[in-house]
Amino acid sequence: MLARGVTAIAKERPYNNLLRRLSAADFALIAPHLSQEEVAAGDLLYSPGDDVQTVHFPCGPALASYLVPSEDGRDVETILVGREGAVGGIVSQGFLPAYTRIVVKFAGPFVRMSVGKLEAAKLQSKTLRNVFARYADCMLAQMFQSTACNAIHSIEQRTAKWIISAMERTDDADTVPLTHEQLATLLGVGRSYTSRVIQSFKAEGILQTRRGAIQVCDREGLKRRSCRCNEAVKGHFEEVLSGVYPTDQAETG
Image 1 (tube, rainbow, N blue to C red):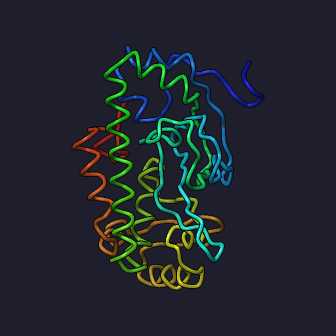
Image 2 (cartoon, helix red, strand yellow):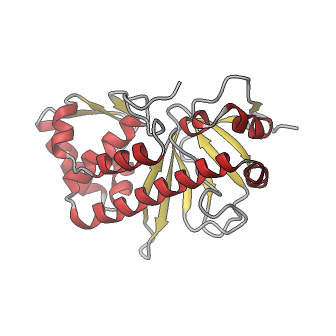
């Protein structure tokens, strides 16, 4: 019995590139165990110490983020996960405590399944195990790149990077639902720092702000202000799991 607000998966595959990357035979192994639910921004998927029992696949414009709590009570965002992947039980194979908070950054549909059902399906298919192992490698690369980025790049470069990363995961839309507060969390800095950077970008005509969102007016200008960390991550995705990272050139149908 599905919970209220949860729907079974139709025959057409969900708008998640990792699921669309699976062969027909591998998808058939997990399809009966998938359900879909519309999830609101800010919803908590996991807290540190929670048992990881469910795999969550963001679909379409939906976006999840990993947040590591700091000693001063702030959460620092490490990576974003959109329709290119999944969160929960990917690296650890589930049934282990969560290390970070995982929250919904952008609202939208999430497809879910039990970690136990996924692991059972992996035991039946070497190719299914291979796809998820490759995705785990890509996720680890994202984390490595994020660590390096936080250490060596300026707030301006990282601000531009996060906005571009969010755009790529929201159907490449010019307007993304990011607030100053959310950007500050992504950057691990105070809101005042983020506001100064945003004002600078606005003065250059790169972007505008509206209530609860940022509108990009000059994509090329934003790219010029960004570091190259997104490109490094996309390059690794393309080499390890071609066609999964959400770009104009890498959409699966």
